[in-house]
Amino acid sequence: MRLDVVSIFPEYLAALDVSLVGKAAKSGLLDVHLHDLRDWTHDRHRTVDDTPYGGGAGMVMKAEPWGQALDALAPVDGPAQPRLIVPTPAGRPFTQALAYELAAEPWLAFACGRYEGIDARVASYAAERMRVDEVSIGDYVLNGGEVAVLVMVEAVARLLPGVIGNPESLAEESHSGDGLLEYPVYTKPPAWRGHDVPEVLLSGNHGLIADWRHEESVRRTAERRPDLLAAWGDVLSGQDGTDGVR
Ligand code: ADE
Image 1 (cartoon, rainbow, N blue to C red):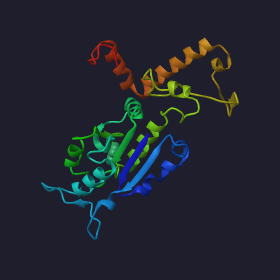
Image 2: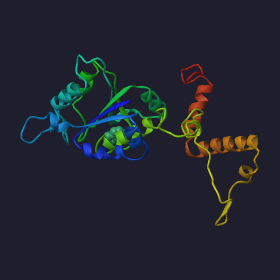
Image 3: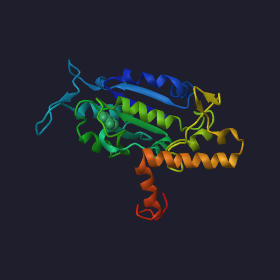
């Protein structure tokens, strides 16, 4: 998968060289290209922002450098176009389902906004030739899109075939197939500082262990994320508009 990230702080993305994502890049599974937006400015101050039309606080990122950046990394008449992700707290939520969807793309580009965001014409210009998604990683406000890109790239990269040693670990984790949170996990020793590993996990009875883990998943989900269980209720009763198919 090819990844392009445009930012005024490309050094923020240095973390992409570390751990599983870094390994994926070194092994060629990920082809990462970082770009400094200021390379597409042409004034002495390398200006990327200006005051908002209509007034109000803060600054808005100018369309010109963004347009030139997009044209340079994905020429208008190029043989292929990336799917463009624009991180913003005003975007659609980033979910495990979207991570799987993005993991199937051959080429992703990320446009990191700062200040009050990017002139809205950049997204509509890009959408003339590529799929554009404005995406939020949660209901809180960061100073810019860079950390959100690190989050999304890590979530996507670990889904690429060959990145995770044991792909079975993907199936059982939180937010995977059954939509439940993952059950608690334990390792040796069986007794530690007065806290014991649940007996059933030491029993060797795989059927009982599977039942216990499912119950724990449901219990945790009900306690911590009742919204996830409510979403399943809607699916089962057909009220999510999908006729029970998701
Ligand atoms: N930029 C600033 N806040 C953000 C958020 N919550 N998600 C994605 N991008 C952002």
